[in-house]
Image (cartoon, rainbow, N blue to C red):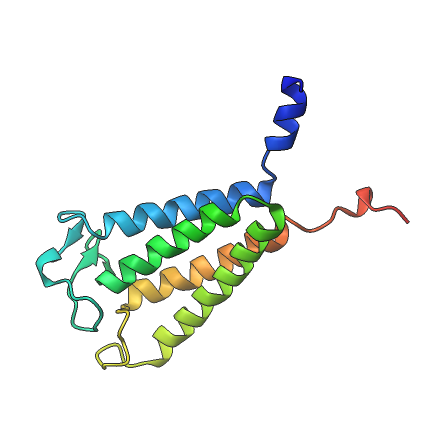
Length: 151
């Protein structure tokens, strides 16, 4: 097999590249959430509860559960970036999940037991941007170009 043929077989589509990058960022954020200093009030981190006072970069409220969710989304992104169809599914479904999480964070009382993740206002805005961004990537990077369709 020539180098060109091998490269063509292993080249990632734009949607696969996007899923890979998004997954890698989620993995990084999940790891950073467990590093004291990068996560302020690290000693006040809870497994899951609204009273976890740990904040990633001093802004985003996190807990062990929240960090584990980021790690899981990261692993999923890396695994599903193997094919274009799976990468698209990851971005669209992941984006939808983040929009649901945003809506949940907006609706609940952030000081109540319902805030088990936990979330704060900064998390809510980030989840909105992530949800819309992931859906946009999944949709726009896989739409067909009208010029390439056959009639």
